[in-house]
Image (cartoon, rainbow, N blue to C red):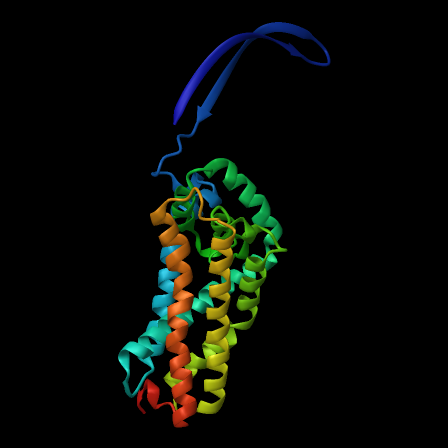
Length: 274
Protein backbone atom coordinates (compact mmCIF):
# COMPACT_ATOMS: atom_id res chain seq x y z
CA UNK A 1 0.00 0.00 0.00
CA UNK A 2 1.17 3.48 -0.86
CA UNK A 3 0.07 6.24 1.50
CA UNK A 4 0.17 9.81 0.24
CA UNK A 5 -0.61 12.85 2.41
CA UNK A 6 -1.55 16.20 0.93
CA UNK A 7 -2.41 19.45 2.64
CA UNK A 8 -4.35 22.22 1.00
CA UNK A 9 -6.46 25.24 1.92
CA UNK A 10 -10.15 24.61 1.70
CA UNK A 11 -13.49 25.90 3.08
CA UNK A 12 -15.65 23.84 5.36
CA UNK A 13 -19.31 24.83 5.67
CA UNK A 14 -21.86 23.75 8.25
CA UNK A 15 -25.40 24.82 9.13
CA UNK A 16 -24.21 26.89 12.07
CA UNK A 17 -20.86 28.26 11.09
CA UNK A 18 -18.40 28.70 8.25
CA UNK A 19 -14.66 28.69 8.67
CA UNK A 20 -11.50 28.38 6.65
CA UNK A 21 -9.06 25.75 7.62
CA UNK A 22 -6.59 23.20 6.50
CA UNK A 23 -7.78 19.82 5.33
CA UNK A 24 -5.54 16.83 5.46
CA UNK A 25 -6.33 14.31 2.76
CA UNK A 26 -5.04 10.80 2.99
CA UNK A 27 -5.07 8.83 -0.24
CA UNK A 28 -4.54 5.13 -0.03
CA UNK A 29 -3.74 3.38 -3.24
CA UNK A 30 -3.74 -0.37 -3.49
CA UNK A 31 -1.09 -1.52 -5.97
CA UNK A 32 -2.45 -4.07 -8.38
CA UNK A 33 0.07 -6.87 -8.28
CA UNK A 34 -0.05 -10.57 -8.75
CA UNK A 35 0.34 -10.99 -5.02
CA UNK A 36 -3.20 -9.57 -4.53
CA UNK A 37 -5.37 -11.48 -7.05
CA UNK A 38 -8.49 -10.90 -5.01
CA UNK A 39 -8.58 -7.29 -6.25
CA UNK A 40 -8.42 -8.27 -9.94
CA UNK A 41 -11.52 -7.59 -11.99
CA UNK A 42 -13.35 -10.86 -12.87
CA UNK A 43 -13.09 -10.25 -16.63
CA UNK A 44 -9.36 -9.55 -16.36
CA UNK A 45 -8.93 -12.68 -14.28
CA UNK A 46 -10.87 -14.70 -16.85
CA UNK A 47 -8.54 -13.48 -19.62
CA UNK A 48 -5.41 -13.99 -17.54
CA UNK A 49 -6.35 -17.55 -16.64
CA UNK A 50 -7.40 -18.49 -20.17
CA UNK A 51 -5.52 -21.64 -21.17
CA UNK A 52 -6.80 -21.73 -24.74
CA UNK A 53 -6.84 -19.57 -27.80
CA UNK A 54 -8.93 -19.92 -30.95
CA UNK A 55 -6.34 -21.98 -32.82
CA UNK A 56 -5.56 -24.39 -29.98
CA UNK A 57 -9.27 -24.83 -29.22
CA UNK A 58 -9.87 -25.91 -32.83
CA UNK A 59 -6.98 -28.39 -32.69
CA UNK A 60 -8.22 -29.73 -29.35
CA UNK A 61 -11.75 -30.24 -30.69
CA UNK A 62 -10.53 -32.23 -33.69
CA UNK A 63 -8.09 -34.26 -31.58
CA UNK A 64 -10.71 -35.17 -28.96
CA UNK A 65 -13.49 -36.05 -31.41
CA UNK A 66 -11.23 -38.05 -33.72
CA UNK A 67 -9.45 -39.73 -30.83
CA UNK A 68 -12.80 -40.58 -29.23
CA UNK A 69 -13.97 -42.31 -32.40
CA UNK A 70 -10.71 -44.26 -32.74
CA UNK A 71 -10.95 -45.35 -29.11
CA UNK A 72 -14.24 -47.11 -29.82
CA UNK A 73 -13.03 -49.02 -32.89
CA UNK A 74 -12.80 -52.76 -32.29
CA UNK A 75 -11.76 -54.08 -35.69
CA UNK A 76 -8.79 -53.88 -38.02
CA UNK A 77 -9.23 -50.66 -39.93
CA UNK A 78 -8.16 -49.36 -43.31
CA UNK A 79 -6.00 -46.81 -41.52
CA UNK A 80 -5.41 -44.11 -44.19
CA UNK A 81 -9.05 -44.02 -45.29
CA UNK A 82 -10.56 -44.14 -41.80
CA UNK A 83 -8.19 -41.50 -40.39
CA UNK A 84 -8.85 -39.24 -43.39
CA UNK A 85 -12.63 -39.48 -43.05
CA UNK A 86 -12.69 -39.07 -39.26
CA UNK A 87 -10.36 -36.06 -39.43
CA UNK A 88 -12.34 -34.39 -42.20
CA UNK A 89 -15.79 -35.17 -40.77
CA UNK A 90 -14.88 -33.71 -37.39
CA UNK A 91 -13.21 -30.70 -39.00
CA UNK A 92 -16.36 -30.22 -41.07
CA UNK A 93 -18.55 -30.40 -37.96
CA UNK A 94 -16.44 -27.70 -36.29
CA UNK A 95 -16.49 -25.40 -39.31
CA UNK A 96 -20.21 -26.08 -39.84
CA UNK A 97 -20.87 -24.80 -36.32
CA UNK A 98 -18.88 -21.67 -37.21
CA UNK A 99 -20.88 -21.37 -40.45
CA UNK A 100 -24.08 -21.35 -38.40
CA UNK A 101 -22.55 -18.47 -36.42
CA UNK A 102 -21.94 -16.77 -39.78
CA UNK A 103 -25.66 -16.76 -40.48
CA UNK A 104 -26.79 -15.88 -36.98
CA UNK A 105 -24.34 -13.03 -36.43
CA UNK A 106 -23.95 -11.54 -39.91
CA UNK A 107 -24.77 -7.98 -38.73
CA UNK A 108 -22.08 -8.16 -36.06
CA UNK A 109 -19.67 -9.57 -38.65
CA UNK A 110 -20.33 -6.54 -40.87
CA UNK A 111 -19.54 -4.13 -38.05
CA UNK A 112 -16.47 -6.06 -36.94
CA UNK A 113 -15.22 -6.28 -40.54
CA UNK A 114 -15.38 -2.49 -40.90
CA UNK A 115 -13.27 -2.08 -37.76
CA UNK A 116 -10.75 -4.73 -38.85
CA UNK A 117 -10.48 -3.15 -42.29
CA UNK A 118 -9.48 0.14 -40.72
CA UNK A 119 -7.01 -1.48 -38.34
CA UNK A 120 -5.46 -4.15 -40.58
CA UNK A 121 -5.74 -2.83 -44.12
CA UNK A 122 -2.59 -4.03 -45.89
CA UNK A 123 -1.82 -6.42 -43.01
CA UNK A 124 -4.52 -9.09 -43.39
CA UNK A 125 -2.05 -11.76 -42.29
CA UNK A 126 -1.67 -9.95 -38.98
CA UNK A 127 -5.44 -9.96 -38.51
CA UNK A 128 -5.59 -13.72 -39.15
CA UNK A 129 -2.80 -14.38 -36.65
CA UNK A 130 -4.47 -12.09 -34.09
CA UNK A 131 -7.73 -14.03 -34.41
CA UNK A 132 -6.14 -17.49 -34.15
CA UNK A 133 -4.12 -16.47 -31.09
CA UNK A 134 -6.98 -14.66 -29.34
CA UNK A 135 -7.25 -15.98 -25.75
CA UNK A 136 -10.40 -17.92 -24.91
CA UNK A 137 -11.93 -18.15 -21.47
CA UNK A 138 -14.03 -21.16 -20.54
CA UNK A 139 -17.22 -19.13 -20.83
CA UNK A 140 -16.31 -18.08 -24.38
CA UNK A 141 -15.91 -21.58 -25.85
CA UNK A 142 -19.60 -21.73 -26.76
CA UNK A 143 -20.04 -18.02 -27.52
CA UNK A 144 -21.20 -17.68 -31.13
CA UNK A 145 -20.20 -14.02 -31.30
CA UNK A 146 -16.60 -14.92 -30.47
CA UNK A 147 -16.43 -17.57 -33.21
CA UNK A 148 -18.11 -15.26 -35.71
CA UNK A 149 -14.82 -13.36 -35.68
CA UNK A 150 -13.56 -16.07 -38.03
CA UNK A 151 -15.70 -14.62 -40.80
CA UNK A 152 -15.07 -10.92 -40.19
CA UNK A 153 -11.36 -11.78 -40.35
CA UNK A 154 -11.70 -13.93 -43.48
CA UNK A 155 -13.74 -11.14 -45.06
CA UNK A 156 -10.52 -9.13 -45.25
CA UNK A 157 -9.54 -11.59 -48.00
CA UNK A 158 -13.04 -12.02 -49.40
CA UNK A 159 -15.57 -9.27 -48.53
CA UNK A 160 -18.46 -11.48 -49.70
CA UNK A 161 -18.43 -13.09 -46.25
CA UNK A 162 -19.74 -9.91 -44.64
CA UNK A 163 -22.44 -9.59 -47.31
CA UNK A 164 -25.55 -11.69 -46.70
CA UNK A 165 -26.52 -11.32 -50.37
CA UNK A 166 -23.43 -13.14 -51.67
CA UNK A 167 -22.97 -16.74 -52.81
CA UNK A 168 -20.11 -17.29 -50.36
CA UNK A 169 -22.34 -16.38 -47.43
CA UNK A 170 -25.23 -18.63 -48.43
CA UNK A 171 -23.20 -21.67 -49.51
CA UNK A 172 -21.37 -21.73 -46.18
CA UNK A 173 -24.42 -20.99 -44.04
CA UNK A 174 -26.28 -23.69 -45.96
CA UNK A 175 -23.45 -26.18 -45.48
CA UNK A 176 -23.41 -25.38 -41.78
CA UNK A 177 -27.12 -26.10 -41.43
CA UNK A 178 -27.10 -29.31 -43.50
CA UNK A 179 -23.81 -31.21 -43.16
CA UNK A 180 -23.50 -31.84 -39.41
CA UNK A 181 -25.99 -34.78 -39.28
CA UNK A 182 -24.43 -36.58 -42.31
CA UNK A 183 -20.94 -36.13 -40.84
CA UNK A 184 -22.06 -37.66 -37.54
CA UNK A 185 -23.83 -40.49 -39.40
CA UNK A 186 -20.68 -41.45 -41.31
CA UNK A 187 -18.61 -41.30 -38.11
CA UNK A 188 -21.11 -43.69 -36.50
CA UNK A 189 -20.88 -45.98 -39.52
CA UNK A 190 -17.10 -46.14 -39.09
CA UNK A 191 -17.36 -46.88 -35.37
CA UNK A 192 -20.32 -49.30 -35.63
CA UNK A 193 -20.10 -50.70 -39.19
CA UNK A 194 -22.54 -53.56 -38.55
CA UNK A 195 -25.24 -51.40 -36.96
CA UNK A 196 -26.11 -49.14 -39.89
CA UNK A 197 -27.34 -49.71 -43.44
CA UNK A 198 -24.57 -49.37 -46.07
CA UNK A 199 -27.25 -48.31 -48.57
CA UNK A 200 -28.38 -45.35 -46.45
CA UNK A 201 -24.87 -44.34 -45.36
CA UNK A 202 -23.54 -44.66 -48.91
CA UNK A 203 -26.30 -42.50 -50.40
CA UNK A 204 -26.02 -39.85 -47.69
CA UNK A 205 -22.21 -39.87 -47.99
CA UNK A 206 -22.19 -39.31 -51.75
CA UNK A 207 -24.73 -36.49 -51.41
CA UNK A 208 -22.86 -34.68 -48.63
CA UNK A 209 -19.34 -35.05 -49.98
CA UNK A 210 -20.39 -33.96 -53.46
CA UNK A 211 -22.27 -30.99 -52.00
CA UNK A 212 -19.27 -29.60 -50.12
CA UNK A 213 -16.85 -30.35 -52.97
CA UNK A 214 -19.05 -28.69 -55.59
CA UNK A 215 -19.56 -25.67 -53.36
CA UNK A 216 -15.79 -25.36 -52.94
CA UNK A 217 -15.19 -25.52 -56.70
CA UNK A 218 -17.76 -22.81 -57.42
CA UNK A 219 -16.47 -20.65 -54.58
CA UNK A 220 -12.85 -20.80 -55.78
CA UNK A 221 -13.96 -20.03 -59.34
CA UNK A 222 -15.90 -17.03 -58.01
CA UNK A 223 -12.89 -15.90 -55.97
CA UNK A 224 -10.64 -16.00 -59.04
CA UNK A 225 -13.21 -14.61 -61.48
CA UNK A 226 -13.75 -11.56 -59.28
CA UNK A 227 -9.96 -11.17 -58.92
CA UNK A 228 -10.10 -11.10 -55.14
CA UNK A 229 -6.52 -12.36 -55.09
CA UNK A 230 -5.18 -9.01 -56.31
CA UNK A 231 -3.01 -7.18 -53.83
CA UNK A 232 -2.55 -10.27 -51.64
CA UNK A 233 0.70 -12.04 -50.83
CA UNK A 234 1.27 -15.45 -52.43
CA UNK A 235 1.88 -17.37 -49.22
CA UNK A 236 -0.99 -15.90 -47.24
CA UNK A 237 -3.34 -16.59 -50.15
CA UNK A 238 -2.01 -20.14 -50.36
CA UNK A 239 -2.50 -20.70 -46.64
CA UNK A 240 -5.69 -18.84 -45.75
CA UNK A 241 -7.60 -19.24 -49.03
CA UNK A 242 -6.04 -22.05 -51.03
CA UNK A 243 -5.15 -24.64 -48.38
CA UNK A 244 -8.16 -24.01 -46.15
CA UNK A 245 -10.61 -24.38 -49.04
CA UNK A 246 -8.88 -27.25 -50.86
CA UNK A 247 -9.38 -29.43 -47.79
CA UNK A 248 -13.05 -29.42 -48.86
CA UNK A 249 -12.04 -30.62 -52.31
CA UNK A 250 -9.57 -33.47 -51.73
CA UNK A 251 -11.08 -35.09 -48.63
CA UNK A 252 -14.58 -35.28 -50.16
CA UNK A 253 -13.05 -37.29 -53.01
CA UNK A 254 -12.03 -39.88 -50.40
CA UNK A 255 -15.54 -39.73 -48.94
CA UNK A 256 -17.20 -40.24 -52.32
CA UNK A 257 -14.95 -43.24 -52.97
CA UNK A 258 -15.84 -44.79 -49.61
CA UNK A 259 -19.55 -44.17 -50.19
CA UNK A 260 -19.35 -45.76 -53.65
CA UNK A 261 -17.66 -48.85 -52.16
CA UNK A 262 -20.43 -49.19 -49.57
CA UNK A 263 -23.06 -49.16 -52.33
CA UNK A 264 -21.06 -51.50 -54.57
CA UNK A 265 -20.22 -54.06 -51.87
CA UNK A 266 -23.38 -53.81 -49.81
CA UNK A 267 -21.33 -53.62 -46.59
CA UNK A 268 -18.82 -51.47 -44.71
CA UNK A 269 -15.71 -53.49 -45.58
CA UNK A 270 -14.16 -50.38 -47.12
CA UNK A 271 -13.40 -49.29 -43.55
CA UNK A 272 -11.51 -52.51 -42.72
CA UNK A 273 -12.00 -56.13 -41.70
CA UNK A 274 -15.33 -55.88 -39.93
